[in-house]
Structure formats: structure tokens, C-alpha cells
Length: 485
Image 1 (cartoon, rainbow, N blue to C red):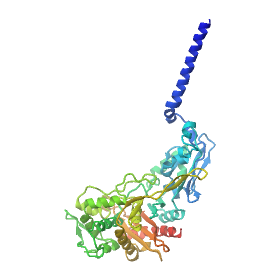
Image 2: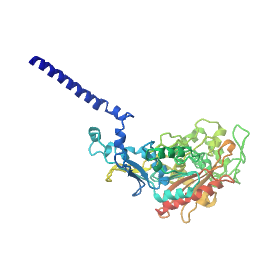
Image 3: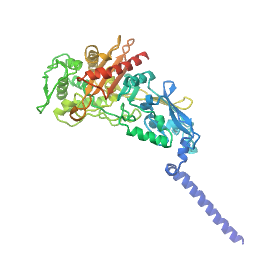
Image 4: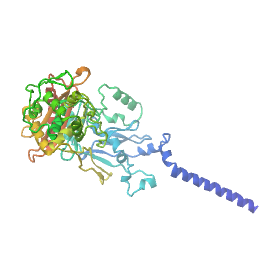
């Protein structure tokens, strides 16, 4: 009898060991697979079991959380949702996250290991810390100036601090309220369907995710290339450019909307925006020289993040001379985001050094302890300091005596460049109006802001009047807000 009892005990011990080994296998080796299984709602329930962290503009939160009393306890709320949607993105229990809500999701949801009191705490305890906060670089007054300036028109504004790369305003219109997508149920799915079906594309972040032909604002890049490569050694000297200009290898002539462009100097060509001179200079710089120049400004960079990904601004690397001529005046296949063109203005105003743009100043714990602090870093030396000084003078002339007078601010040194970009079949679409600019502090003489504005539905009677009339006043309002501090 004792022998049978011993056998039964040994068998039970084996079963117990098998159970323990199987439990260890599941908890150690299969835990992640089971956690990630779409049928497992525990992770989702835990994710929404506490309030989400806040996204801050200055000292004020532009987000919040609401207790729904349902299984997914907390859903996202937004203060002035349409104003800040291009910055925050949305955090939806149904459709996921975008923009900062996505890029900083670990901090905002409390799952980032950096929030834990000690290393590996979350992994060992499989717990979730109180959500942290994200402090942006945005200035509320500038964001509002850009948003109010665009009004009901389709367009975008990007503004940078040239010395640091901080993004001070990021606006896209028309916008939407991301709070409509926060929860679950038919109201959310209906809102999603309506927003995606809208012809105006309110969920498209035009400031960083939409590229446009930059038109004459791109002439600043071409001018920088011409000066840095010594194709132009004296910006005030006459060029040998005829008007109209025959595109190389073709019988097609490139006209000017402005007068007095025949053999105009580089400085004159920038001031009144001569297509012929700038196209000719682009061809003289050559394809390799232009490609290298645009790279330094950020064109063709597929990895730019602010921390959300930014659409690539394009300048073709393989084209004929006639295509190069058109590309050098911001047409053909040349495209840019508003953020990219703000980077162009920023580099000019900052002595040629382009700082890497960033939107998040720091992330913190719920109690305010800094988890990560973003610091200023150089992106590229876009041009020599001497070239930057010459371009600063030319851009000031555009505002004081040229097409950009609507961007002028009394008592303030402002540099700018207008532009109108043709698009559509045979250029039949309503031109896009552009204005890029920068402003110096009257006290320090240092640049405080660089701005790019694009207005999609701008009426234009001639090339650069549209940029000066439609986009420049918006840029002026944003610069005035920056100067007020």
C-alpha cells in the first residue's frame, strides 16, 4: 500500500512540476505574444484606466481626460482643439494616435520605462506609471495669430526661432476638433467618415505633411547656391540674362511677370522676382551644385522628425537643363512643406547656420520632474556667413522696396520673399500664394522668428502680388506676436 502511495505522490509531483513549468513558459516566454494578441483586451483596458498625460503650451494644458464611467475609463479631451490639432494630433480609443499624441505616446500613456522609479521596474512588475506630460515649444499668441490670419482659407503657417530651431507656431487650415475622435461608438465612426470624406481635408497637416511648389520663394535657395559657388561674385552686377529667356535645349521662352529683368543683377532679380535671371543662374550653378545646395537646406531628407515625421521636400537629382531652369525658380517637380520654407528663411537670418527644428521642449513626470530635455543642435551650415549677410540685405530690400511691402513692421528689420506657385494641368489651378520672412529684435538686432505662409486658394493677377497680398499680412501678424514676446 505504501508503495502505491509513493507512486501516486511522485506522479502528483510530476504534474505539479509540469504545471509550474507551463506557467513559467507562459509568463516568461509567451507573455508579450499574449499581451499583443488582438483578442486580449486587458492591455487596452489598463491603457485607458488612468487619465492620459497633458500636452502643454507654455504653462497651460491644451489637452485633458474625461472619466466615461465605462470599461475604457478615460478618453481624451482637447481645449481649443482645431487651433492645436496640427500640433497635438488625436488620441482615439478607436483609431489610435497621431502627431505628438503618437510620437510621445509612451510618456502620455504612462508606459515609457523612463517614468519608472527604478530601471526595469515596469518589466518586472508589469505595472503602469502615472502618465507624464509633454511641454511643446509653441507660443500661444503666435499660434493664434497664424490661425486667425488664415481664417477659412486652405493653407498653413510654420514659424521657427532661428537661433534654436524651436517651432513657435504650426497651423493648418481648415482644421478639426480631435476630441470628436476620442472615444468609441457611432458618433466617433460618423465623425471619422465625415472628416475623411471632406474635400477640404481638415485632418491633413498642411504645415508638415503637404508639399507645394514653392514658386519664387525658392529663389532664395538658388541665390544662395549662386553666391556660394561664385557663379555670382557681385550681387549688384548686371547678369547676361536676356528677357524673355529661352530654356536650354528648347524653343520655349520663360517670361517675367516683373519689369526690368533683362540683364538684371541678382539683387534686382530677388527684389522684383525675375524668373529669367534665377532660372539662368540655376543652370549656371549646374545640377550637382544645386542638389548639394538644396540638401543643406533640408530638401530630399526623408528622415526629418520634429518628433513626428515630416514629408520630404523634393528637388530632383536627375533632370535636363531646361528642367533644372524651372526647378531653380520653384516649379517643375520642386516641392516643399511650409516647415521647409521656414527653415530656408531661418538659415538666412541665422548667418547661414540652420538649426534642427523641434516641437517638444521636454517631457516630464506627472509631478514635473524632467524625463528628457531637447536641446538645440545644428542641422546644416546651409550657406557661408558672407552669403547669408548678402541675402539678408536682399530680403530686406524685398520688404522695403519690392514685392513684400505688406510684411513690413514699423521700426523692425524684416526680410522677406514673396512667391506664387502655378499648379494644375497647364497651370490652370488657382496659384498658391507664399511668403517667407524673418524679423529681428529692435533691441538686440538678433533674429527672433522665421515664418513661412502658404495660402492655397489665393487669387492672383500677377505672379508675386498674390504672395505679397494674401500671405505677407499673415506672416506680419505672426512676427508681431513673436516680437511682443
